[in-house]
Image (tube, rainbow, N blue to C red; front, side, top):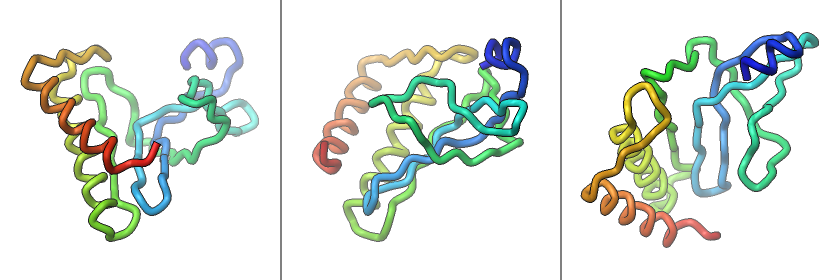
Length: 131
C-alpha cells in the first residue's frame, strides 16, 4: 500500500472490510485501501475468489499497528440459533489466532492444543456454513 502511495500519490485509508453472508453473519476485517488524488477508495489487495467489490467502512482510529493487530469481529445476521452459533464460533476462531500470533509479525504459531482447538472450531463451522 505504501508503495502505491509513493508511486501514484493519494493516501492510505484505514478501516474495516465488511463481509456478509445473508441470514448467517456479518464480519468486519481490519483493512486498508488506497484513496487516490480524486478521493476514490480503491482496494489494491488481492481478494479471495477474485472479488471486485467490497463494503469498506473508513475508521481513522483503526490505523494499522503490527505490534497490536485487530481481531476480526463477527455478528449474527438475525437471531436464529445457527447464525448465533456461527458468529460465536467465528469470534472464538479469531481470538485463538490472535492469541497465537507472534508479536510484531503476521506469523501465527499454533501448538498442538491450539491446532486441536482450531480444527474443532473449523469442523463445526464447516457443518454450519454451506459451501
